[in-house]
Length: 111
Length: 114
Image (cartoon, rainbow over all chains, first blue to last red; front, side, top):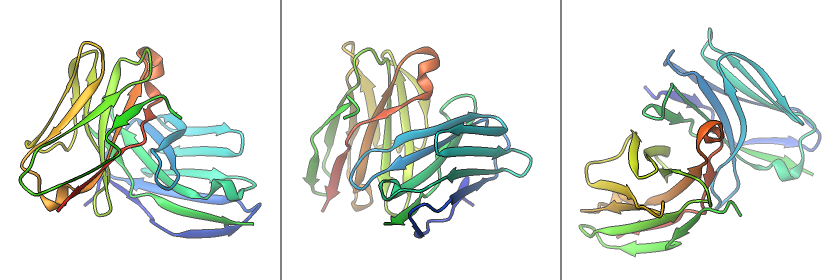
């Protein structure tokens, strides 16, 4: 069983839609939760970083962590064609010895 | 441009060979991380160095090794290469302290083993 499960998509939405991306995990020791965006042929870039449970908002992006359900989400409001990319969730414990990524969800926002 | 540089961009080699990938972190960053991204395994954390010392180890094979030099650049050595080692190898760096949450990824080295 994988440490982190993420639906690979692809997910295709019209411009302006609200996008919901999700990951589930099994290790209750994970405390730090991240979302990365990766454009084709580029390195990942950090979008959101959350410690423990709760919500965090940054512009059009909202990250949610529910540790009781071992479930994390990323919401993108008013999606734009420039949001078309692969979105990777990631999580770890206190250090990087157990640092795992989801398989990534490919998002396509149509103009 | 993240400020992290990686060389070479592409590398084609044969099974059984050994290669070295190089990474220069952003100015001021003390931590360097290495990752492998392949179609079947996804993005996997390999190893972290902080100011010259190994700090954390992920799914790094025994055939792979890394080091960070006094000038903070890092090298990832891959030996006895197998077809399955073909992947994109990313290096990332982060600042010390609270800034370590933000990792800046380089453009990657694409390794093809034939």
